[in-house]
Image (cartoon, helix red, strand yellow):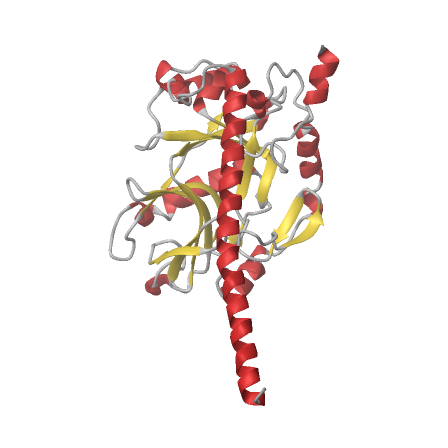
Length: 352
């Protein structure tokens, strides 16, 4: 029986391992003892490749400033220049954000090597301030907003103060950008600094130099608020889930950052992601009943959850195929009509 279960352990729901937009692997495989994800091995690979993945972020941003905006092309491949298998350098703002995986393999030293960051419900985005304006980019690289701010170089009065790059979550409910991570501040890149340093640098910059970004004014029409981080001891995580959240909107989930991780682009095994109701099963940490009630309504048990997830994915794929087929068919008809019309014109001109 154990051999049979281990064979099923390597089945991947999506081409990308531990994709946080799919089911958690613990929910996708019933009574699975080994995930087969080799997440811990990939963590070691990423940490080992840090020294060979360096590049000049400031020159990269300046080059991007002079280029035209990126269009949203979901079918295009990621514009990456490979540095190592687990590190990549972006050429555009597309896939610039450091994204997470499902936290599948919990390390033995999890409490001492990881930091937890609660995430409010909202849209993940990259905020860049430079040359007198502040622009917001979606994960696809498309610019979605532009406004002035009191971030370095974010409005016309402080346009000479350089650049700033922030990893944020935009809350449409209370119109606040919640800052998760800091990539650059006043032309000083900290992309190659470890997680704890980046978090502390963000805290000090906001407290010492960024008081104005937390208040609404003519030059700062929206607020920016830093999200605090917590250590990953069982007691700390239990308090995080039981006490009042550091933001006024609902909790979406919790990101777990490896302390030695640099800021990389795209999905990385050094950043884990869990929903609140997954804490008892994955981490063995109890959570309040209010958090457990956030489980999906159709969640009854693991086999039922597996079947529901498979049906939902297959239905979505069928809809996408039907949409693609419906969009292609009119184009073919118009091409045929245009071809026939051109042939008629040629016949009229030639007099045949």
